[in-house]
Every structure is written in structure tokens, then in C-alpha cells.
Length: 118
Length: 114
Image 1 (tube, each protein chain N blue to C red):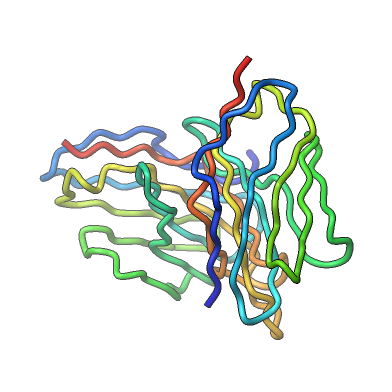
Image 2 (tube, each protein chain N blue to C red):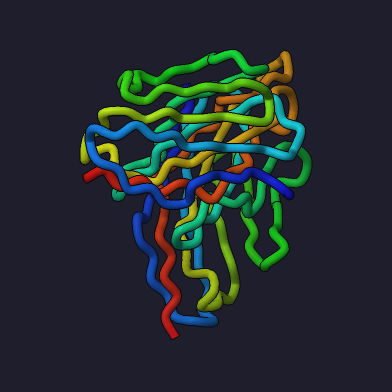
């Protein structure tokens, strides 16, 4: 079984400052990795994902995350945050299965609340 | 219509009421899920349906009863709930094969049990 640890439950930052949200995972097999974002009173939306290929993945709104297999990490970064980035962020992992079936296998971290102050 | 749609968005019910939450997905997926999100707790997977068959039930009390009549619709029937069942209930869908298990979520149904 896999597990996910988000090391910070809350991260306050000022607008235009850089931010890093940390995520570490534990798994005995290869994994896929995801970051989801949840704005107040909404569901979770996919921010970015790593399935294969380049270990650095980017979102359309300036976030990026790097898969580091040796450190079993998938930290989320943004060089300059906006007020609108205030939300809760969830890291999630699923294991790579040989048969291709992957449903129901996402494990979520406990979430990190990012608060951007003016 | 796009994505995953949940109704109602808000629901207030007494402990003796019977109500249902509805989820509909327009993504052509064939796996659907119910999650419970409570304050200060991690996301809890409640039920998983694949090809309309329940494949996972994570020790959820029987006062929650899921129904999946087809691959596009998922219901959560509620009866004799407790105040601690107040939470945001999220529906999600995914491809059964491929995609790495990526989930597509609805906006949730906020349930308050009085």
C-alpha cells in the first residue's frame, strides 16, 4: 500500500512571494503522482500530474512540481503567488499496475492550506 | 453539460429524514466514487463502482446506501443519519483503465444533519 505525507498543514505567504508545498510518498512500487486544488465551497480540481517522461511538470497557472524518485517527493512550487491562489492543495499517489487498471487507487495526503496575504 | 455534476449542492436534514444525493458524469468514464470530506480530516473514500458494480466499500455505516444504475449516474441514499455525518460529500469519476487513476470531481454536496 502507498501513503502520502504533506508536511505542512498551513502555509501563509505574502502576494508575489515564492511558495513550496511539500509532499512525500511511500510506496513499494512505481507510482503516478498528482496535485489537486480545492477552492472554498468547491470540489477538487486537478492542478498537474506526473505519469511518465519528464520529471518536471507544469500547470497552466504557473505551478510546477518535480518528481524526485530518490527522495520520494513531489513538491509543488510557484515562483510568485497571487491572492487567487489561496486554496487547499492535495497531493495524491496511485500505483502503476501492469494490467493498466488504475481505478480507485488514488491515496490522498491530508492537504495544505495555502493563504496568500496582500 | 460538462464534467461531473452533483445535486443538491446543499442539503439540511433531520436525523429521521430520508434523502438522496445525485451525481452525473458526462466524461464517458466507467468508474465512479463517493468521498466524504469532514473538517480537519483527510478525504475518506466511501464507495467505488466500476462498470456499475460495487468494487469497494470502506466500512461505511449502512445508513449510507449507494446506487449506480448506469455508468453515468451515481446516487447516495441517506437515512437516519447522525450529526457527525455532516460533511461535504464529493462524487468523482475516472477511466477504468489508463489515466493513472486520475479522478474528476464534482463540486460536492454540503450536508448538514440536525
